[in-house]
Figure 1 (cartoon, rainbow, N blue to C red):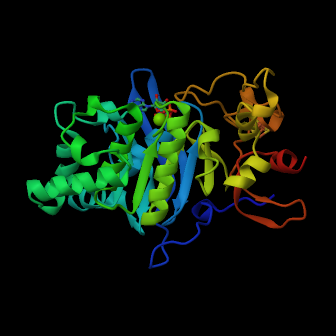
Figure 2 (cartoon, helix red, strand yellow; figure 1 turned 90 degrees about the vertical axis):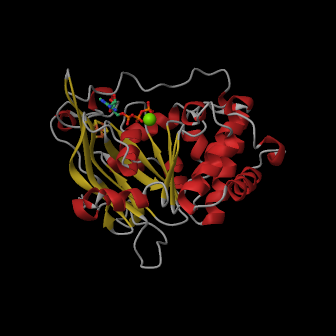
Length: 352
Ligand SMILES: Nc1ncnc2c1ncn2[C@@H]1O[C@H](COP(=O)(O)OP(=O)(O)OP(=O)(O)O)[C@@H](O)[C@H]1O
Ligand code: SF4
Ligand SMILES: [Mg+2]
């Protein structure tokens, strides 16, 4: 079996910026929280890359470390109790964890923006949306109030809020959930960042609105040639918009693959379980598969493969040896670009 060198195991990204650097590289990132019940090992050696114009979907059950990884990139982790004992977060090749506070502030917010799940709590209820959108331009670009409001209207148009000019003076609660999420997207886009991290941006919306907001995000991402990290626990949502997927379990990446490949033939039993739990139109009426059991307690992650207590394919070795992230190959040994799996039995899973 090929075991990938830890320093080079992030999947190869397409494109990159002018200097040939990927936009963002997360390397061997560890995050832990000191709590009364012990140390929560929330992120345990995450590696991923995003290029300009590329969408990476990060997928996994609740508690798998998706948001904590994103918060570390954005520099909004609660520290303490959070701590980053190990790892690098390279933005255009520079490690954000070693930059001065001033340099870091310049990058975060301007170059990297974040969209959260809950627009209502992210927006200030007592300020109009026009004021909040305009603030980006007043503070960062020194525009006058009038010019900033004009920019706010332009952005609201851009994210297709009907009658933007009339609605620029409205308050967040006067908009529907879907419209509020569009306003969040507009805020994130305001300074034309290089990278957007969207953490469950459509989870609070109903299904049809979800698809519209996701399509809008994908369209703007292409137009602005931004990198996009799309965090979700819903495989169905990302199928049409992502280029590649990283599946997380218990603070680790357990599988990476181009999106179509992952759906067609997963190389990790956990991914297979996630795929089998998606409702399908052609299987109406059948009982939906669910992965048995719960993710491990992150203060006491079991020895061996963290998925072993739930894995239908587990063998003895799984309970003792932690699987490395293996390069996934065709049955004849041909390398599958960007495909990795942290399973001792990845060959049986993908080719079996
Ligand atoms: N401030 C904190 N203090 C203690 N533990 C924390 C803190 N923030 C996150 N955690 C823990 O870190 C782990 C990873 O959390 P994270 O929010 O990244 O999960 P997630 O994958 O985003 O899940 P979800 O799909 O529910 O959003 C969880 O066990 C969580 O309880
Ligand atoms: S290493 Fe073993 S327990 Fe873990 S996913 Fe693979 S087969 Fe299952
Ligand atoms: Mg989360």
